[in-house]
Each structure stands twice: as structure tokens, then as C-alpha cells.
Image (cartoon, rainbow, N blue to C red; front, side, top):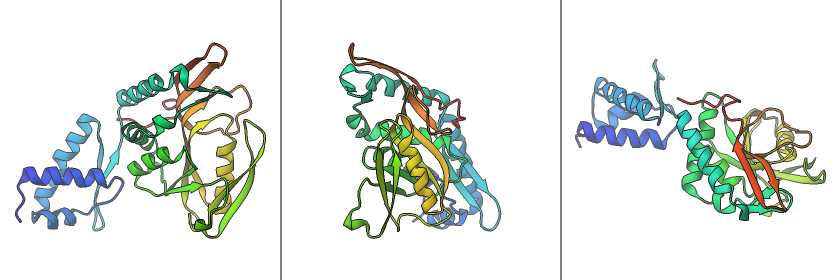
Length: 277
């Protein structure tokens, strides 16, 4: 089959978008479309310019025998602020207020379009960070972890509160919850990660950071390294915060359970160097 240039561009774009952070040799495209590498290079210049012009991401060319092209998803500052505004608008409804200063977010976390946009926002912030695995705690952190992993093209591992027979041999640790000061347990299958991997941890909501510290301690048991921390919503800190370095999208500034009011503001995404085009 002889591909027309318009067909090549459409298929090439689709393939790149479906395989972020993957180095694709020019020979792959050349053989796929039965076209000369010079023609493929010209096509990639068009895709690169289009991606960068509309804020889709960056296209990086790696030279040499083992070289090729790699698509890096990134976002513009305008898109980040738009996602922040949408998230604040959705989560600020007073009927979302739960006892203890928490927010009901289950339906929001189940919105695939919003999760995909949020995942790309966080993936953009860690675009130049080496990440091998995304780690989160069951269950509400899973949609965010999967969304980020989709744009970084890495697997997800899920920490559980108790051991399951389907997990096989596990490693468990005890940690102190930052908000309740209770001793809790985290469990992770021994097959989940390999020694030396760089792991990004994430969750939907963070108060004092006890859960994040628990995951960080769990990494040490696997001889893995922390690559970064991403939080969808962080609470205004009225007590000591156990986590120092993290990126948040939204901050829960204040809640009034009596008046049933919720005040949300932008998180520290830009302060912490979120990468944008």
C-alpha cells in the first residue's frame, strides 16, 4: 500500500500521540509508509510545528544510529489555568463538603475527560524528570495515577490498606496518618516494582501528608527512589506538613462546616516549576 502524504501525517500523528515518551526510529515510519527517510523527516517537521503551535507538546529528534523521534506531552500556561478554574468550579459546590474538612470528589475522579486533562498537566510538570513507575493508594488515587501514567507512558502500582490473596507475597509497613495521628498499614506486592526504579507518588487529596510519607517509606523497602510527588487537592496547612516537595493543582483554602462554604484557590503548580510551553 502506497500512503499519500496526508494519510501519513494523520497516521503518524495518531501513533505519536498514542506512544508518548517513546523513542520511535525513523526506520519504523519509513517501513510503515514505504517512504524515504527524507520524506519522513519532512513530515515530522510538519507534525512538530503543529504540535508546538497548538500546545499539544514537543517533538524531540534524537540523532545517531539508535536515534529517532520522541513525543513529549506538554501544556500551555493557559491550559493549566483553565483546568484549575474548571476544577475549582466543580469542587466548590457546598454539597461536596464532608465532615472533617474533606471534599466529595468521587464523581469528579470518575470523569475521564477531566482526568485526562489533569493527567497531562501533571505529566507536563514531570516531562523532564526520569519516572519509571507511578504509585498511589487505593482507591481514589487510581484515576489520577492512571491519567498521569498514560501521558508519561509508565506503569501504575497500587498500594493497598490490607493484603489480598491475589497480590502474592507482599511488603507491609506501618505509618502514622498526618491528620488523625493514627497508626495505619500499607501493603504492596513484591512483584510490583524492581530495585532502583524512580517512582512518582500521587493522590487525590492531602492534608498533612502522612499517606505520602507512608508511600515514600515503602519505596525504601523496595530500594527505589522518589522521583516526585503530585497532589490534586491539598488542604490549607493548619498543622505541620510532613511533605516538603510536592506539586499541587488546587488548594483547599478554607471550609466552614457551619455555613457550608468552601474556598478553593490555585495550588503551587507554577511555584514548583510546572513545565509549560
